[in-house]
Image 1 (cartoon, helix red, strand yellow):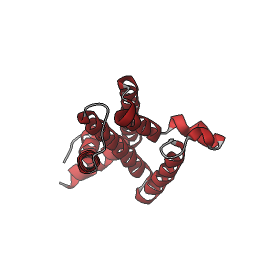
Image 2: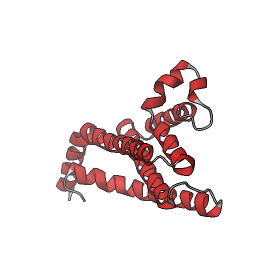
Image 3: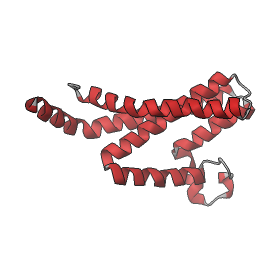
Length: 166
């Protein structure tokens, strides 16, 4: 059992992240090798970006569920997912959508995921890919830091209770 809140959160996040890592690698393998989706840059970049994306979204989901509770956290995650699908320009240009979606477009992480994958697969601008990766990493780290700040006292209390019971 971890002794500090940071190790407690890291252990829980790593359990969730391991599933995300497996899904990311499997998805890219199927897309790149199985379906033959080519990339402008070496395929390792696609694997790395997908891995970062999976870790980022796992961190955001972990934060939402831990802070808001299982049901509410998952509901908020679904709402955010719907907003991201509509405003990320993945299937329909955001410039042709309502102003609301243009407004939230730069604030949602899927915007940078779509842009990064677009550049990895067909455009090849390494600077844009690196920028998108940094923004996604900031979202993931930000979610974990927020979770730590919000739940720190609760976790300390829980760890103290468990050590007394032992």
